[in-house]
Length: 331
Image 1 (cartoon, rainbow, N blue to C red):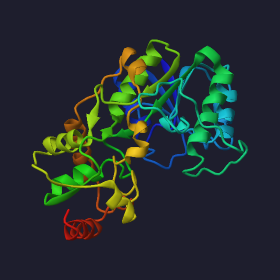
Image 2: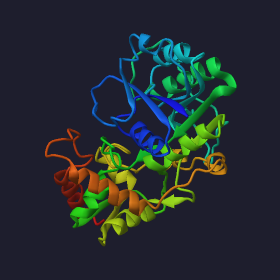
Image 3: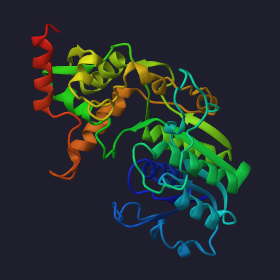
């Protein structure tokens, strides 16, 4: 297949390009040249900003396009218009954040989505992220109809994750000592390794599959206790976990998800209980979290000092302060 990737040099797109090249597909990457532009010399690179001029696409055709970098509906609409007669299938990477609250546990792809009060707002914020992604989906499906595929991941993890939404835990557990474990041991957790997601998206393209899919893992329900134990097991360490309840954490201004990755308060944990039945039926398979943790830490340790500018989700000093306060109250 001839595949166009809008991006392809950072995280999920990077893993998809790697998998596609390994299968012998012909790849064209359209990107700004800012993130490892020397990667994948065997692929064609088109340097352009998709928020500006897409003239580099004129007169070209591909079998499919993968869009892991679309966040604003106007930008996605421009890409869809430029490619509607140039590609066979448009696979858009969306998010489970498109779903409106309250969300029922086990919600599937037909659950109601967010509708922005002002669809014309162009500023991307945490409050508008899900609504913007829903509008992006609409642009793609309106333009491509049955030639559109919409993939809605939750938390994507693995090597080349430049956030601290997952790398925090392999790094923290590898360091040892008393570890602050947030919330309930039986709280639900859903993650998907970027490599598994990339391979599965490529499978969808090769089989020309339409539809909308919650691309969340693992294949069976996972708890926070199992997640932390799995990560530790992959690193060969025995964690010394101290479980701190969510009311204490919230009272001490620890921000769920950001301040302590994987932790979602009980009131919001339906977003960690999404149905992935449709994706599993279409072949999504996920590797053990132990493997993801080991590979993520190996990748992070391979980086040059200072290569990652992201601050730790929870600093060691702040963790010690919280643990001391927790024990002082008898926890």
